[in-house]
Image (cartoon, rainbow, N blue to C red; front, side, top):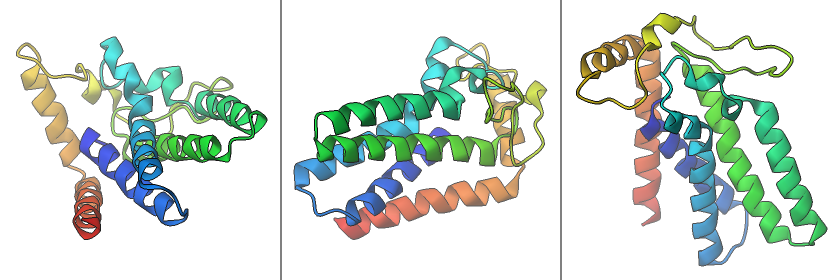
Length: 179
């Protein structure tokens, strides 16, 4: 998925999550922030200057890494007997795992390594064409032509375009509705 869709999904999830708890306004803001952070966290590997086809090959795009990290954080929250911290960790985790799901769902040049470290195979709903993602994650003057080619390739999948557009529109609708 593209960055705006990850953000929109994080926002939608935070609103659904908040509706299930009777929380203070400051706690709601923190849950929204943590869910959004979780929905973006796996893409931290993009800061390493990787190409689109390679950034899902890092530990940040593996369920086992996030499962262990969230388990450790949750254990700390339980051990200090602070349920609110546990709720915050769950909000972050929901964002992370939906990010991974969406990257599996929308992978065109890179999937996710679901069974890492036992297997390095990348999984995706659609067939992967890594050669199409042979472009840096962040466009600049030198690679803008290749970046445009990747975006054109990505947008050829009408199902993904419609899905991403709907997710963003739902997030906008929820945001307006909650004002």
